[in-house]
Amino acid sequence: PCASPAGTITTRVGAVIGCDDGALLAHVDGDELRVERIPYPEGTTAAAAQEFDNREGRPTVAGLAGSQGIWMLDTRARSWTLLPSPAPLAHVTAVDDDEGHLLALAQDGRVLVLNGSDGSILAETPPLVAESLSAGAAATLIADQHRAYLSAPSERLLYEIDYADAARIARTFETATEPAFVAETGR
Image 1 (cartoon, one colour):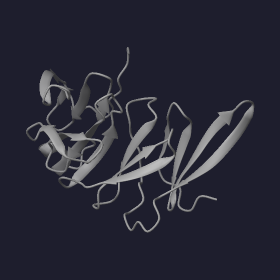
Image 2: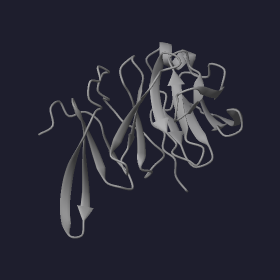
Image 3: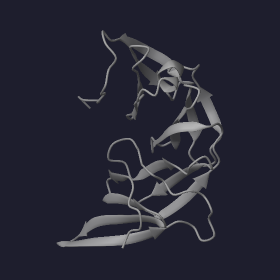
Image 4: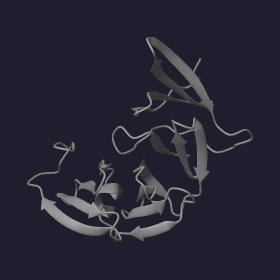
């Protein structure tokens, strides 16, 4: 059973489905499908994650714990970590690189590069998508092994951010219209 299923993602380990009390992890063991429950830590009062995001295919995923923090789920270790939120956040994504980077989109439009172990801010951009967020436009934050990409629909821009280099804006792409959908290809 999974009360109030919300949020799904596929990792190297298997498919994750968020539940009120944690997550289900579906994976193949030999020729058999196995489903494991990964409960939130006992005694937690933080909100359940409603969606998950990560660098595609990596085993660690991140999700907001409402306004109470950031949930990190390590699907290999089958464990959750609750990190403090350094600012009001709109979205988070686990990079799951050697440095343990975690990316967050703050509600004021900044991209924060966070330490995935303790939630501390390592670097940040200026507000890049403040107009989009205030207009209710869906700004998309995608991470790969070297860069992050942030769509700014209302601003009609796409940012390439080098999160390992102090959140440096590596490139900016102008769009002719407000992009409704962003996807990364070619890696």
